[in-house]
Every structure is written in C-alpha cells, then in structure tokens.
Amino acid sequence: MTRHPPDTARTVYWHRELPPPGAEPLGEHVVEAVSGRVPITLAHRDDLWDRCYSELMASARERLEQEIAHLGGDCVHVLREAIATRRDDAKRQMWLHGRFTYVLYRMPQAA
Image (tube, rainbow, N blue to C red; front, side, top):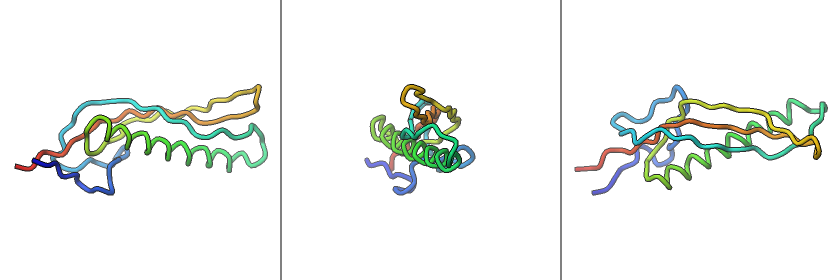
C-alpha cells in the first residue's frame, strides 16, 4: 500500500487554507523558527522588518517540511503563529522569533 500526497508541491496550509478533504489528523505540534539578524537602526527600519519577516517565514516553511518528513505525515495545517522581536543590545542586532502551532495530516492509504 502506498500513500498518495494530495499535491506533492503543496504541503503547508496556512490558517484559513484547509488541508485536503479526507486527510487524517495525526496530532497537534509546535515548531519554532528565527530570521537572520539585522542591525538595530532607525534607517530603513521597514525594509529590515520586511527582510526579517520574509526570512522567518521561509525558515518556518523549511522547519514545517522537515517535521512532515520526520513525523511521517503528508501535510500540515498551521493554526496559530506568535511572532516576537528579539534583540541583542550588546551587538546592536535584532531578529524575529516565531512559534507555529500546527496539525500534522496523513492522507488515507490506498486500498
């Protein structure tokens, strides 16, 4: 018997996006991710925030895909996210830290 993923290109479903019909929930989990560090400065503040957010979300997607493989699922549905700013005043750097709560799903096995 083989499992058939719903769409091999699609494994992460965010918030209002629903996982494929018939997907079986395997449990709720949490994963954390961080962005790269940027200098603490008022110059280009919005650009630096956007860069950190983009890096954080790419890191989160990578971590979620690793969890799918590690836990033996086919896709995940992210239910909640909490994003906070972290800073190192000694190095004058800041970054974003995210905590993502998700449900792991497996597609039913073919008969």
